[in-house]
Structure formats: structure tokens, C-alpha cells
Image (tube, rainbow, N blue to C red; front, top):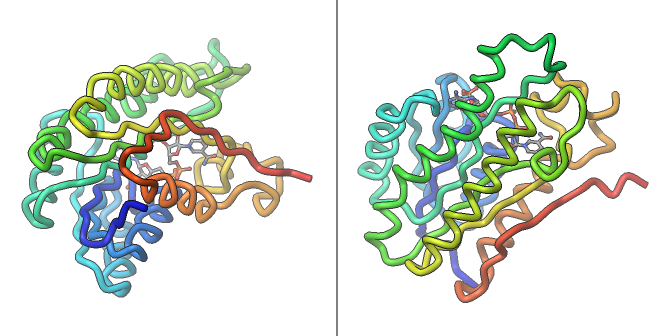
Length: 238
Ligand SMILES: NC(=O)c1ccc[n+]([C@@H]2O[C@H](COP(=O)([O-])OP(=O)(O)OC[C@H]3O[C@@H](n4cnc5c(N)ncnc54)[C@H](OP(=O)(O)O)[C@@H]3O)[C@@H](O)[C@H]2O)c1
């Protein structure tokens, strides 16, 4: 078992949804948490929740699609929290629509956020993990990246590319004792999936953010010699 107590994790998009749930699950293991996002209100509220658990928590406001801002924000969090051990590369957007109807700038923004954003964050965190001689990066892709369908071209392409990026990252960084974990969850009840009409009208029937968070926590708690390279999670949906 890998004891997570007193480690430091950065969770991008940690102010709501899956990121917030993972931040809380890790805080319950004694992990200090830095969260990022654009909505300062959500970040502040989540930091209060995390501090009430009894760990150190901090936030940084920046958009994940701007590399210089990502480097600055991650640097500030690392300084406040004393380095970084774990990155939960979670920030993402889901815009859905047909190829004809979706404006090109929206299509590009999905790629910029979900692919470039994850690349920038991983690259910015890497020197801190390397300095410690170990670390973990969890890249939150999607089942849509494994198999696309109609009306999701931007999202599915962004996540397919993220899976590919993550595989290269795993091959390069495992030699540095950094575990890179590619996750491809199916629908989980969150603002993104509910607003995108993905929960089939009943969000209670599908996976909840807490289910995802427990899964991530358990993967990270595995002995450091064990690396879950890829994983999917689906709703049982009886
Ligand atoms: N829910 C699902 O069914 C599902 C399934 C598979 C994969 N995923 C993936 O899981 C991740 C989290 O999704 P979620 O369901 O929790 O969605 P969500 O509730 O909409 O949360 C998205 C998070 O990403 C952050 N974010 C989005 N754009 C950003 C930007 N430009 N800069 C910085 N932060 C940004 C948001 O923070 P701010 O609003 O503060 O910017 C928010 O914290 C995403 O990568 C998503 O693709 C979700």
C-alpha cells in the first residue's frame, strides 16, 4: 500500500464536479491539495471544505489553455504547498453538436482545453515530480476517446488525442519512477454531463463523482511498483 499522507496533489478543475470529489477523497487520506480553475468562488468554497478536513489547501485561478498562466499558477501552488507529488489532470469542457453546426472556434476551444491544457499542466508539474524522484500523473480522458459517436467530434477527438499523449508520457516518465495513469470513464453525473444531456434524464442512475474519486484514490494507493496504465469505469446500469 502506498501511504498518501502528507503528499501534495494538484487537481486541475478542482472547484466542482469530478475534480472536487477527487480533491476531497485525497484530502481524507491526508493529502495536501492545490486546486485550479477559472471560477474563483467555486475554488474558495472548495478550499474551505478541504481545510475543514484538516489538510493544507490552496487555489490558483487561471485558464488551462494558456501555457504561461499554467506554469505560473502551478509554480505558485508548488511553492505554497512545498512541491508536488501528484497531478490530477482533470480540467476539461464538453461541447457537443454536429460537425456542420458546431462553430470552428468552439471546436478548437475543446481541443485547446482538453488536449493542450492537459499537456501544459503535465509539463509544468513534471520538474517538481522529477525533483522528488517519484510522482503520479492521472490524465482524465473519457470513454468517448476510445470510441467516438455522432455529435461529439470535438470532445471525442480531444480525448482520443489525450489518451495518445498520455501513453507517450507513461513510456517516457515511468523510467523516472513517475506513474502516468490514463483513465477513460463513461458518463458520471456532473454539470458537464447533465447539461450535455448525457445522463439519460436521470442523473441518479449513473456513476456519481464520489465513485470516480474512490477509484482514483485506490489506484494511487497501490504499491508504487504497480502502475495501472489504463482504466475504464462504467455505470452498472441494471
Ligand atoms: N462527467 C462525465 O460524464 C465525464 C466522463 C468522462 C470524462 N470526464 C472528464 O472529467 C473531467 C471533469 O469533468 P466534470 O464532469 O467534472 O465537468 P465539470 O463539472 O463541467 O467540471 C469541469 C472542470 O474543468 C474546469 N475547466 C474547464 N475549462 C477550464 C479552463 N479553460 N481552464 C481551467 N479550468 C477549466 C472547470 O473549472 P472552472 O469552471 O472553474 O474553470 C471545472 O472545474 C473532464 O476532463 C471531463 O472531460 C467527465
